[in-house]
Length: 284
Image (cartoon, rainbow, N blue to C red; front, top):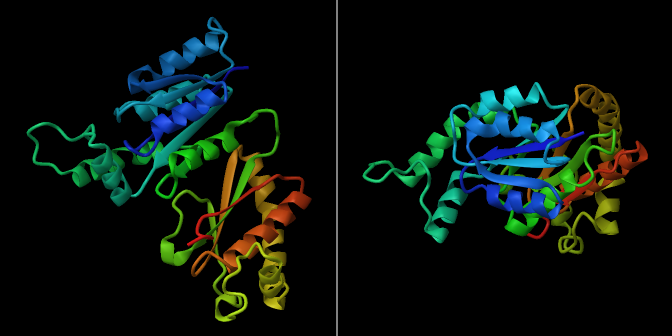
C-alpha cells in the first residue's frame, strides 16, 4: 500500500527542511511541486508503476487549487497525511532578511512590504491549514529540531494502530504554542520558583516532581485528566486522528508544566501509548 504525505505551509516555514527529513527516512520526495499537479502525481504514485511505497509531495509557493487538489487525492488514497508548516510573522521576516531571499508574493515594482506578503499568504492558506492532519509551528525550531519532529511523526507510521501523541510543556510568558490540540493551564499549582533551593532545578528533577506532583491538588488534577484522556483518546482514534498534541503551561515553562507533562507521559504509557514528551522552554 502506497503512503503519501503532502507538505504545505508558509513560505520560509521550513518546507525544504521537511523535504530533506523525508528523504532521510527513505521516502521518495518531489519538492517544490505546483498545486495543480498534486492529484496527478499522487495518482501516478498509486499506479505502482514506479514502485514507490512512501511518497512525500512538498508544495511550492501557494496555489489557489491546493485545497481542491488535496481533497481530490484524499478520495483516492487509503493512507494520506497532510502536513502544514507555519511560523510567526516576525520569525519569517528575520529568516527572509538573513537569507536575502524574496518572498514569492513580493512582486518587482510592488508597494507591498514583506510583512504584507506574509500576511497575504497566511490568509490565503487558512483553508489548507484547517484541513491539515498535522500542523507544526517552526517559530521556535531550528532545522535540526524540525527534522527530528518530522522523523518522530513519520518513521514507521502505518505499522502501529495507535496515534502519535506528543506532550509539550511551555511557559505562558513565552507564548502559547500554535500547533497543539489541547492546552491545560498549570499555574494553579504550587510554584517551586519561589523556593530558593528548588529554583535552579527543572520539572524533570525528582525534587520538583515531589514538590509539584505529590500535592493533593495535583493528584486530583491528574486523576481528572486521566479520566478525560481515557475518554478522549479512544474517541480521537475512532475519528481517525493520527496525531494528538497536548500542551501544559505554567508561567516560565521550567517547573510545574514540565513536571505535569512528565507525569501524564507515565500515565499514557500505562495505557499502552508511547507519547513523545518535549519541553519547549525548560532552558530559558
